[in-house]
Structure formats: C-alpha cells, structure tokens
Length: 100
Image (cartoon, rainbow, N blue to C red; front, side):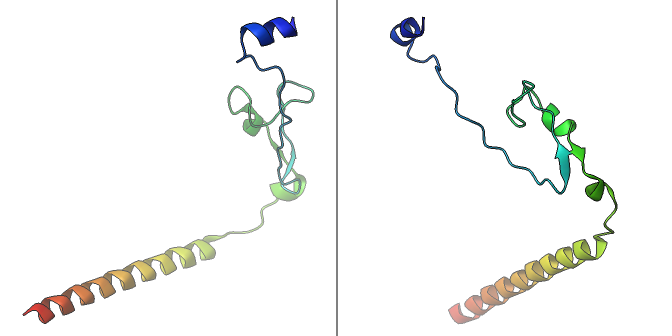
C-alpha cells in the first residue's frame, strides 16, 4: 500500500517530524495535548492547548505590581520620541537658514 501511494501521489506524507515544544515549567504545570497521549501543544485544531494550561502554585501567587516598571518604560519612550522630534525640527530650521 505504501508503495502504491509513493508511485501514484508523491505529495502524500509518509512520515511526520517530531514536534519540539518548550514551556517554562516554573510557570506552567501541564498542557492538554492532542491527540492524547503523546500529542502536541501548539499544532492542535484551535487554541485549546493554551486554554487548558494549568499554572503552577508558585505562578498562581501574586508577585506584586509592575506599575512602576510600566510607567518608567513609557516615560523613557516618550522622552526619546520628544528628543528625536526636537532634533529633527532643529535640523530643518538650520537647513532653511543656510539656503537663504
């Protein structure tokens, strides 16, 4: 039968590669796999592998708020953008004076 598939339709997949999937075991205890057992997490029909993920007890505990970090990153980005806009406006002004 395999020989017939090989001769008739060369596009038929006769073997499958092993799937390499990794996840942080300190954050997630397990994922449902499809087909069960020995299936994959990512290449399922849908996103059920992610919906069924169970967090570990350490990840379920609150580690605190990251509000200060978010504010610092947003503030840094705004400073960089405003500084870039100011430099561009100065360069355009200097070029206009040089032409006159």
